[in-house]
Image (cartoon, rainbow, N blue to C red; front, side):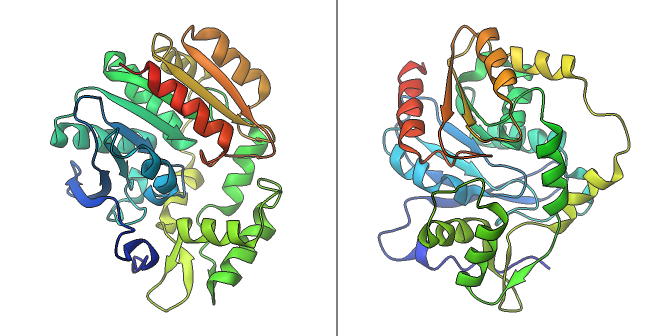
Amino acid sequence: MQAEHGMAEALKSGDKRWEDRSWTSSDGLKLHFRDYAGSTARPPILCFHGLTRNARDFEALAGRLAGEWRVLCPDMRGRGDSDYARDPMTYTPAHYVADVEALLAAEGIERFVAIGTSLGGLMTMMLAAANPARIAAAVINDVGPEIEPAGLARIREYVGQGRSHETWVHAARALQEASRDIYPAWDLTDWLRMAKRCMVIGSGGRIVFDYDMNIAEPFEAADGPAPSPDLMWSLYDALASRPLLVLRGAHSDILSPEVAARMAARAPGADLLTVAGVGHAPTLDEPEAVAAIARLLDRAV
């Protein structure tokens, strides 16, 4: 059963800066996105979250940019307030990209800035490969055409594990225990903020992760070989002519320094920023990331 979505804090009077909207996938799912109003003289910004995350990841970023920019933050199928897929084998990047294509068509968006974290970065590459001219600028956050095996193994260990917690503090402590190496400088307040981004109060009253546990099934099936590095680099190369920011967490186990350096070298319009003191992935709220995104947006035309 899908979790109930309370998020009372975000809905307090004056706090909610977005409109909750929806679009429909080709297979009939009702998918949710947050729509932050902004200038129509600029291309909108689309923010794509990681594998087990949702639109709330970009709440601070979208809040900073809203007004000057229209910002759309979709919950991909099986996450947040979007419908869960009837067929778990549609939890794949190709289906997520098809869902985004449907959103672009529904909203009449021809050009946009893409900000993609992890899975969202891979989606950005795929969207660019289909039509590079529509990408006004892009942020690829802690992912690349080659993924480190250790990081992929870590993700396989936790995805689809339906743990629950009695209180928000218990949930925050559990996240801290599991991920303290990713954000070693965080205190309990930071972990509580993270818990409320990636968890909700479930139907049984306990705190649960805000995604369909069945998203793990395509990982477990492993029907065919992984995409070749040559194919993935060709997808990335579609961004080479666009204003581009490649972000890497200094302790990332997903994007190696060597691959990040190759990404920067292959794209004349790319800036490479390594965010100190974090692993996979930077939250995009770090001061250096905020500044780098602002510089990128100055180049988005």
